[in-house]
Length: 518
Ligand SMILES: Cc1cc2nc3c(=O)[nH]c(=O)nc-3n(C[C@H](O)[C@H](O)[C@H](O)COP(=O)(O)OP(=O)(O)OC[C@H]3O[C@@H](n4cnc5c(N)ncnc54)[C@H](O)[C@@H]3O)c2cc1C
Image 1: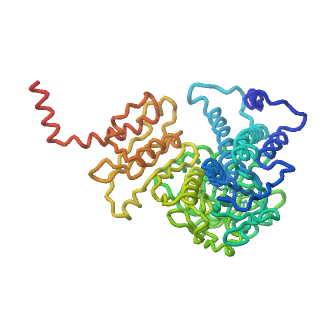
Image 2: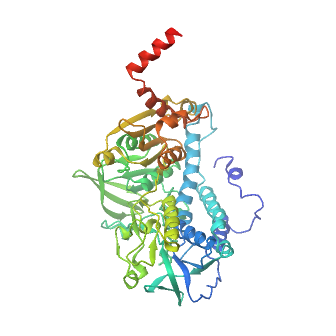
Image 3: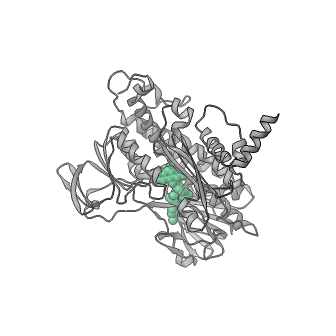
């Protein structure tokens, strides 16, 4: 175990130590906030202005916003308040990624003139304990108590529509004027022979691990698969990642995905692209996974298999037919641009209806759904600019159009790129992998889209989202004075590169003549 682990992961000040294991203490704290034992559901009024189903980021936002606007609101959750973000998604995964980055930095300490005495050991239990502590801490903001104080009636139980304007929960009926469905999504279950019998990890149980697997096969090279593969590799597992397409992150630009593939390989992840998992069986204490790469088959033996092959919307258990809400088991609840379903009283928000399954998208869509459900007129979803980020190292973030999308729309594109190895701060930090690439409409400075690959691309992309959503072009970005040295300066360098293209030969010769004469 590394020497400073105990101090680094010490419980926050002010929290009394207990006799029980930390995991239990943090788990109890989480449950106390997110689903208190002995909770009694309220007695419903005759009618709610709004009933919200699902208390992930989408549902929580909807309920809080509606209550703040003076609506009588009910929020129904079947398991834990906080949803995927807090319990099985963003928060635990980012907590693990933080520690994994620390391990990588210790491993690479010599690159920046440091030395880690002795070999770097991993205390996986402490890593998981820190993750549980963070979940417990963040659960307070979304606790049943806080929601009640905010004027939200919190119900625990499985929600099912009983008619087009009533929902049943815990043996009572809630009548509503309007409802918002925010039931999120769950992991897609792979249909590979033998996998169910062997058992596998998804985001719903990977955060319960108490030991780091020695050998781990990750199925799927999307954001979740890549983030987890890199983190577990950095914790010391031998990680094999199988992706049945030619590249990771199929949605992203090729050069971005290539940098990630190179970085995963450099970390020690065994990368198999164009490779499908075709069978799984148990042999002794190990799981044997059969892989097919372009007709060539081979097997690997591992102790855990993790699936990150996609997400399925939670639509099945809601009795949507009774409510007259149209849905599809793959794409989720059908909504128009105002996030209204086929039942005009009922709206949807978040993963259950959106193609882009992100916490910030769930939150933004919930705000629109509340506004449209409670007030006349309509705010459209398609007007929003939604960025996203894969939290690998380096991070890969995108906003707006990809070149291929602009081309499909017949928009002529010009791209300006700055490589991170030309950015002073990236060089001083030893974080030179990546680039900032901004696409503009040819002949203008109007930003159509941008991809950032950098250590903190998720932070940098927000400036570009602001630019796109506010109609700020590269000329204006070039006028913004950036602090030096920062990696975000790369954005200004792109804008400067654009500005240089405005200096035509005629302008240059005019300028030269003026300077010579004055
Ligand atoms: C491993 C992982 C990492 C992720 N990392 C990121 C990230 O870094 N950044 C990011 O933006 N996004 C990330 N995401 C995605 C993010 O977690 C989701 O987009 C977000 O949680 C969606 O919010 P939501 O409110 O739509 O649904 P959810 O968070 O899924 O919440 C839905 C809630 O509805 C409840 N529910 C379902 N059916 C019923 C019912 N019938 N009755 C009552 N309650 C019901 C569920 O129990 C759940 O609590 C990650 C996801 C995963 C799996």
